[in-house]
Image (cartoon, rainbow, N blue to C red; front, side, top):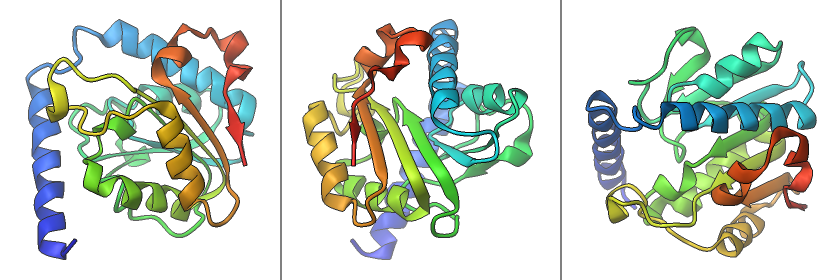
Length: 201
């Protein structure tokens, strides 16, 4: 894809989510999202050490990042728009997952929840490559495999979880540890049973 077309897609996605957040996207689901992000935070605390550098991809309001920070973890967040980020702005960077402004292997762990299905299908491979580029040891992703009520406008890449696992396997050139799970399965887990994530090398 040429750079002009890529920039057009990036700007369109940025504008779309900025506008959605300004108009209350997910506001009604805030408590649901907070529980979800706190479960993600609790799971991550089982997988990484406080000294590890971690990055949440598609951080939304930044709730999971802030929850990890107050528990002593070294974490940042990145999103295509920071419209919904609350608090500690210095810990957040505005950028798309397929073009993140970080050095190679900068983070020991990268993670996302309910994010990758939002990536335009033509950029999924680029996004996964970019995730692996900035990741040193472990990458964790909970991915929605169901259509959005708004259809492809919000979930342009709806695929079964096995498809996502195969995509990560195909792009994993440096043997990074990968953990991928369906969002629906993740949400029903409580933090004590979060060890049910499927791990792949």
